[in-house]
Image 1 (tube, one colour):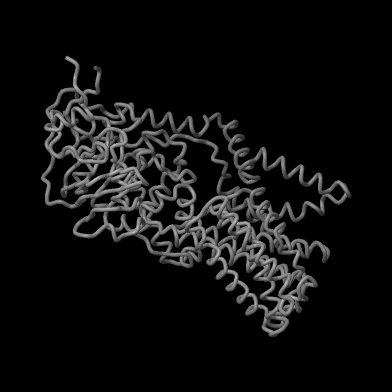
Image 2: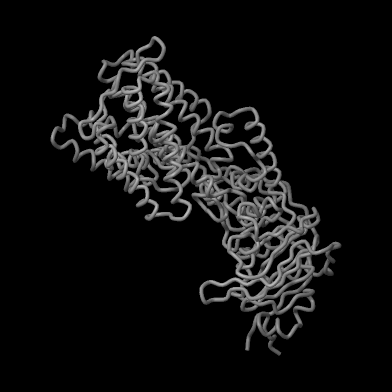
Length: 634
C-alpha cells in the first residue's frame, strides 16, 4: 500500500533573517492625520464649553442628560465592548447609584460628593458580585444572570417603599458643592468634566496591559490565560469598573433630573443603553458616546413627525444596525479609509500586507539542497518531566500513562498520528486540561499545583495547533500580551498614567519590538494580526511566546500550512532560539522539519508512548513505522 514516507534528516544551515523591507503601504486605516485629529478635538472642546452659553435652559438640561448617558455607556462598553462579557443590567447599577445618592442626601443630609461616592462604591461592589457568574458561564446564560439582577433591582426599588418610596418615586434635594449650587450651567460643567475624565481614564486603561488583557479574553480566552492573564480577576474587574461608571452616571442623573422615577431604571433602560453602545460602535472609544448623543437627542429632532416619530426612529436604528454592523464609528472609519485609498491609489490593506509577506519569504535565502545534518548542541539534565500522565474525557482515554523527558538545551520532537494525544499533552503541561493521574514537574516545580495563568511565569510558553491570534489587536499588541505576566501596573496606575505605568509600558513595547525584529516581523508591528498571512501569523505566535522569556518553548505544529520556503525560514528561527539557550518541545507532522531539527523524539499512538529516542532510530523502529510512518513501497 502507499504510505507516508519520511523526509530527509538533513538540516539547513543557520541563516540570518534579512533586513526588513519597507513596511507595506496599507493606506487607509481610517485615522485622520495627527494635526487633523488635534484640530477636530479642539473644535469639539470649544463647542462643548460654549454650549451652555449659547443654549436656553432646557437645551442645557438636555445636553447635561446626554453627558450623563455618555458616562453610563462608556462603562457598559468596558464590560461588553472590551472584555467581551454580556450585561443586560446596566440600568440597575445606575439605579443603585441614583437612589443611594438621593436617599443619603435627603434623609441623612450628606453633601453630594459623599453621597455620590457611596453610590459609586455600592454599585461597584454589586458589580463584582454580578461578575462572579461570568467565571463559570458565558453567552446566553450570562445574559440571563445579568437579566435576573436587573429584575431584582427593579423589584427592590418598586417595593422597598420605606426607603425608595416605591412607585411614587423620590425627590432629590438640590445639590451644592462648596458655595456653588449645582444647577444649569454649573451642573453642566460638572457633568462635562466627569464625562471627559471618565472617557480619558478608560482610554488610558484600554491602551495599557489591563486593556490588552480584557481584549485578549474577549478574542481568545484560553490563549490569554496561557500567557499570564488571570481570566477570573479581569472578568470581575470589568464588571466592577462598568458598574462604577453606571453608579457615577446614576448619581449625576439624580441631581440633574431632581426626581427619581422607578421607570428610569427598568429593563427597557438597560436595553436602551445597550443599543447606544451597539449603535455607536461596540469596542470603540468614541462610538458609545456618539451613540448616546444621537439616541438621546433623536426624539427632539423627530418631533416634527409627531405620532410617527418613534416609527422613524426605530427604522433608522434598524438600518444602521443591519448595514453598519460595527456601528457608526466603524462605518465612519471604513469610509475614511476608502476615501484615502481612492485618493492615493493604494491597494487594500490585506492585499498590501499579503504582497509584502510573499516578497519577504520569496527573497529569503533557501537552504542548500545537499548538506550534512548539523548536530545539536549539548543537552543537560531533564528540565520537564511527566510521569504516568492519564487524561480522560468521560469514557474516552486521551492519554494513558504517558512518560516524557525534555532535557535542558535540546530540541525535543513529539510526533504521532492525528488523535494520538499530542496537543492534549501540551494542554496538560500548560494546565489547560486537568490530569486524572500522574505528575508533571518543571525545573523541580510541581506544575499541577499551578493555575493556567501561572504557567508562563514558571518558564513555559507555547504556540497553538490552530493559530490563536487576538484578532482585534495589532501584531505588536499580540506580542505585548505575551509579556503581561512580567509587568505589574494595574487599573489605577494605568488609568491615571502615572510615571511608573508609562515607564513600564515603554519597556514592554521595546521588548515586544525587539521580539518582532528577531523574527523579521517589525514591518508588521502596526498591522492588524488577523489580516496577516498564515506564515507570518505562525512566526508572530513564536514572537509572542519568546517575549515571555521562557526556558521551555512549546511549538504545536508550527510548520502546518506553510510553504517550503516558509518552513525553511522557520527552521532557522527555531535553531537560533535554541542557540539563545531556550529548550524547545516540538509537535509537527512535517517529517523533514521535525527530523531535521530534533535531538530526540517521543512518539505517541492512541494516547500511549510507543517510542522515545533519536530521530534516526525512530525512522526504523517497527512500532513507529507501523503506527505512523508507514512502510515504504518497494
